[in-house]
Image: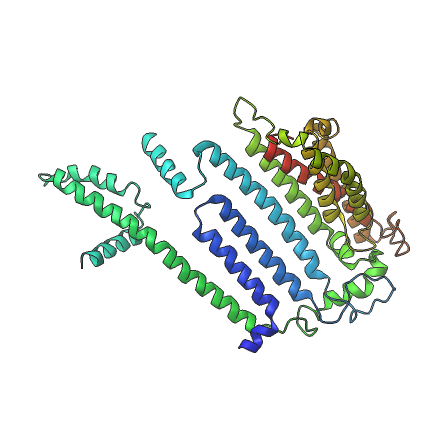
Length: 127
Length: 303
């Protein structure tokens, strides 16, 4: 068990990062900290994906000397997939920050519970 | 005993689905109570109801972290268990690393795409459609942020909060020295994307960073002459349309076995690898404009 965990230490680090991010996302009331937690989770995903493509003792997939032997290079596909992940994460972060800013401008707080309370109060007053 | 009863009531209420985070529970029960026929002691009954609701809320607040912790430990345990079952880190015999697709990309990528950098060949030639989607994700995110930030804006425009930085001597001089080199470095990364590490996304991010540094050190008014909302729209839409049209042409010719004007060329030369260089430039423009657009909208409320 411990040997298996040590053999996959990078993936274990990714799982721990994921857990840190998920804890931040679930247990903090501050919206900005929730966004930071989600970004840490994204990072864990990138680390996991790139670690899957690494092969011990092989070169980066840049064919400078014309040798196209697939046994010489690491797996190039996870790099491309992580690129997609980074772009989507940047876009999602920007949209979340914009929504948070709108909420802050309206309620003057970043605490989700306070915002819930104010929304409830508004809904009671409206009908 | 009493606590157990409360907990049971609370869980039942939650289970039935009429638990609304108990902000209104107390008032709701207060409203409900007068309608009941035996409303003789309603004033006396009201205060215990409020305290019960408040203690329920407190109980809920205390229970949420406990249940969240249990859930998190379950998730982490499951993930760690899965990790122990995975093939060892760095081994070549994993299913992902021995798949036919990878062998094909590495073996014939150089002759088919002409890209020395196999990753650039994958993301901008074999999987160019995926990268087109990525660029559109960035574009859509910018549109969403612009809609959220520009609509419903207050009448009085918020002043440039970074104005104080425009007088900062250290920042100004550092920016004066480093911004030209950052631009050149970003352009180098974009143009070198098919020959080595780099490409449109990383180079675009560097250029976006240079634009951000410039607009922080000097005022955004200077940058506005070349990059305002109008030119931003023109650049991004032109880059995305060029990407779409060029890739449509290449897909059409490839599917029908026609000759294209974009040939792989001699691998290792700057004008080689067919469409990869112009597509990298288009992606780099979109990324740079998006990075600067996000920054500008968040700090000044406009591009």
